[in-house]
Image (cartoon, rainbow, N blue to C red; front, side):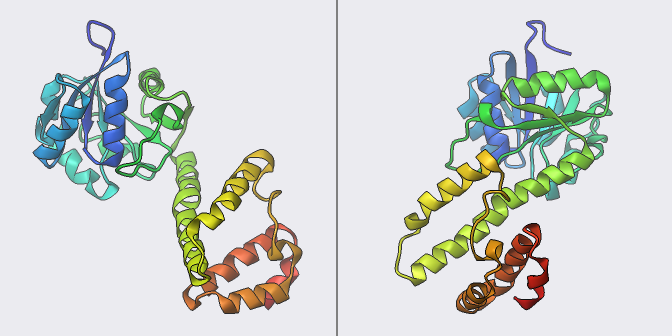
Length: 272
């Protein structure tokens, strides 16, 4: 399934944040040839192709089958996946098709090829923020055992941290990502607002945040927990819950109750 040189021929369907990072990583990988980038917007595909090298083609989804890829990586928003799969159409079993979603099942790719799988990078990608792909954990699975080595080889060409997965484990993995990234960002937004209300810049919380992450990595998050909920200090928690903006009180109660439960102070939860 590889080119005569032994290098994998890769095509990317998508030109968004995840697709862009993957495209650049594959273009730089010594044992891969990025041959094409497809996008709904031809201009976006052309711009990304120029970033990745002179030999990379830009095309629409309906033309990606013509690039002769060994592997097509579908990297688009979940809500767009079905339409993109429809536009690519049936290619047959000459190509392995992978998607990068943490939530979609690999079976959504079967209209393209029976050889389907997942290449899920466990990271948040935002325009303007560089990511060292070699340090990003990548989780893979394939419909057929004989394709697993190919998917693993592809993942290892861009990352030093490759893990096998399946639908059930990936469901938990994605939830972990939501808690790690999305929920933490929401909480940090509250931090910014509380500091602003006191007249302090957001940078005041940065040393505490860095130490929190370091301790969680060293001894575990629950073991590193401190604060009024660990102590069951209801007076402090009631005061803080009344002080925080009304829209955040339910969150304050829920997280405080979680901490108390994890530290066996469950008898106090109904009092907050």
